[in-house]
Image (spheres, rainbow, N blue to C red):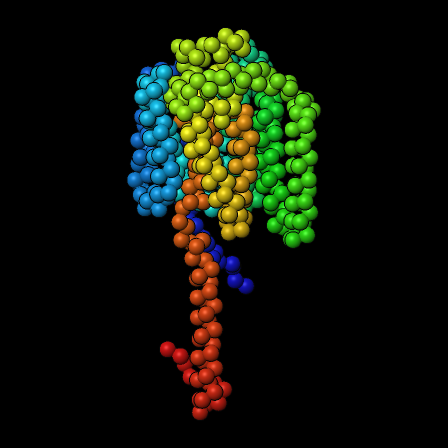
Length: 451
């Protein structure tokens, strides 16, 4: 009896523990866990927060230099990153707050650079695993805050009694826990045999999503974990189940889409939402009027929602509440960088989707179908949260990481059919050579040794 050996063509070595720990540390920082509520409880930008980020930037540069060869191979993603950052930085020349635009562009560059590192280095099942570990760590930390430090872990005024864990508010915890849950589900569906921690992470993150009572987070959880489960079941069930699942998915999507277009209030009420999306439609209408004032430039990257912003003051006065953002990633992008910015980011999002889709036959099972499942979650989030082209933001970083994995020239995957073909050809050639020698050998059927 012999043990199965991993295929050297497809086997991707796991990064060392110290590198995984460093990556998890930066991921936690990208979520804003604990640092913001402790050092800036009023959600203001303070000098101490800027100082805290300097070591994170240093760690990011160190990791990129350590993996310089992989980073060079990911040059298409780096080109996209540079172009997006140059556009954001150029907007400071017409920004209503040039200082904020310049600082946030620098933060955008470093957080996006780390995302590209993540996608270039943590390939195969290793990306969902490091995200699962990060989600489990933050989930356990949130439980500690809820039960040991409820003044931080539980909302005290608005949304009183709802859990927020390590973050300012419950929706932030919901988004992070959804990412952790999808990663945990992907680990369970992958070829990695380590099941205990992913199962624990899935339970912890799911409980915390339910504790937020956020309908958006719950829907994202169901979609993300559901996509992973459906793709895994299709792989296990063969062609018949695949056809049935695709048919069911198309019919369900078409039905929900038709109802949402013809009578959106029915869908929103079924989800427990106010048909006006708790006043968000009023915000969107007001913001689109502002977009009409600067359709090609916007008001500058991350500059519109400042405390002293006059256009934002008009929006807040019109809607009668202190609006912190557009609650829609695409409208927020329009208000910052205009239509050129929206089209540029839309291209990156489409690229992430296509690369994730094309990777399913080759690497989907190995990584637990994480890429396509997370893309579905991100697309829904972008319609209700400002997650597009954001600095220090986990959802945007994960999208860039997924895009990088698809664009990266993966020699192991690309060489697989060629190597297998050569091996088969080599075995066949050797067999024919031995057969010909045996036929002409004076020793009968016993072939001469082949050198």
